[in-house]
Amino acid sequence: MREPTMTNIWHESFRAEPYPTYARLRGQAPVHQATGPMGSEFWLISRYTEARAALNDPRLAKHPSHAPAWLHNFGVGAADSPTPVGLNMLSSDPPDHTRLRRLTMKAFTPKRVERLRPRIQQITDELIANLAGLTRFDLIEDLAFPLPIIVICELLGIPAEDRDDFRTWTRALIPPSTPEGLASLRTAQTEMTEYLTKLVARKRDEIDHTSDLENLPDLVSALIVARDEYDRLSEDELLGTIRILLTAGHHTTVNLIGNAMLALLRHPDQLKLLRARPDLLPGAIEELLRYDGPFEHATPRFATEDIEIAGVTIPAGSVVAVVLSAANRDPAYLPGPDRLDVTRTNHSHLAFGHGIHFCLGAPLARLEGQIAIGTLLRALPEMTLACPPEDLRWWAGGITPVFRGLEALPIRVGPFKR
Image (tube, rainbow, N blue to C red; front, side):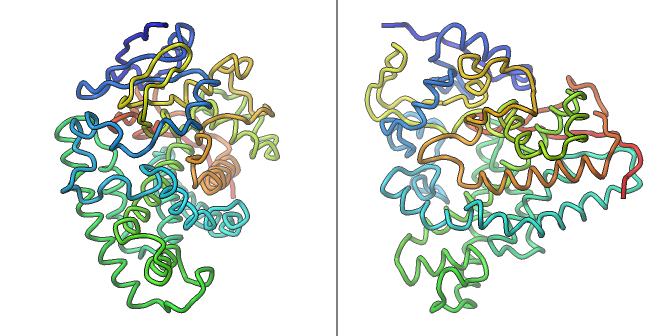
């Protein structure tokens, strides 16, 4: 039986450039035992074949009740938590996961999402128009952050005047992994849940409960009718589902746009090619997702029994992190994985996960990324990074580093193209 290796990878320099470390870990073994924030211990799976299999393994559950020590360390899902675990798709298993996902998946099919293209393009054009006359701007603050928050709030039916609150809450929900950070997370959870409770009550009074789910004005209204008329989810599940759609759907696109543009700016040959060949954009988005995607790890899994992976036994009750960003750079899966190539045709990456927990909002994130990056390349023919890459700061929040994204991306620009 192979002995696992121990590693601690949660320091700032690692967050800035994790891929050499992941290459070393992959070369040693596909499974490693790691020490994480606040002394937490869990298991990393870093090779593509093992990662893909783990994402589809029912013995690796999503409900944290299978890992009591993890719950104790972080206070997640305690009885007094404002949003207990197991009440949304990310922290539930079949049959609850199947039921909750089915309620929302129709809103995120590629065909349904494609109908949003004109509105997403309009929002993008307005945000980029606001940059006219500037010689420098922050891509995260001025485009990547506001675009998806506007889109998801409109999709869910969140009033425009309340969006700033969600900007604050979504940032607080991915805090530094410290006691203070966890306290901020709980405060944001409480405030967001109180707001959503009032929003649901107001919409409940306004909507026609006899309407077909397809004809309701927004997704929150559809979830309310599914709750009230069809008894398909509990009140806590209703609130948890809305919250996870807001937070996960937002951060995914922020990171996709930011990471993708940084990669292009650091590879001017690929940026030049994409400007000359805009028809490559859909495939380029897939390559950019693979190269430096919006998720570092999949959301945590919990071993329901002793599990052997690549000769290593992971004990029951352990926390398992499938390292998507490492798997996507595995040379056994893809030749030359550290090279950005927007003409690649192999798009079997794991950037959005795999299996029953594959990212529900992937079609929306892809479309937002295509529109945002395509419009930037047309409107701003001259773009350069406005600081040395080593000065960029990456988000270090989260109990495990699920998201991979920049705090800011300063861009220097030339004349706008109308």
